[in-house]
Image (cartoon, rainbow, N blue to C red; front, side, top):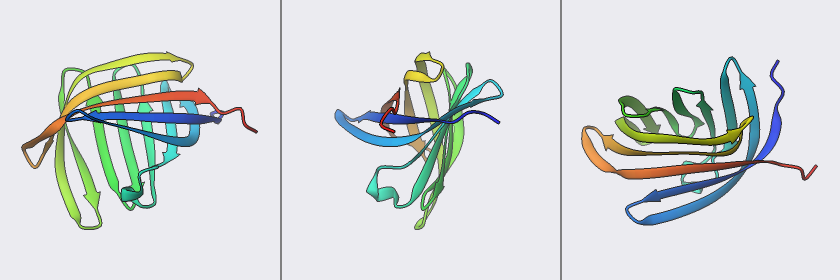
Length: 139
């Protein structure tokens, strides 16, 4: 079984010139050539939702379970389809990923990517996300 480490996460997102920073605590583990980062979504709009970010050398996947259900895959230079479901309904999303930047050592460091999002075929904006992951030594 993979060893889980407690981590602190800073989630930086930028869209249409608006920057948001959120903080979360989570768990990081490594399994089958992939890293997994799991945390409770800090955004109150998402209710009780758990996010899992899985990455390897090829792609980043963001999977959410709970009040919000979503599954998005980011692969550099590629447009990929995903889903996003809220209690109010479901949307087909597509993301066109520009690039993924990994500055990580054993899962600790920063993971950033930018993409254009399309909701039901309509361009919904360009988004840049950066996760800063550090060991949580507060125990």
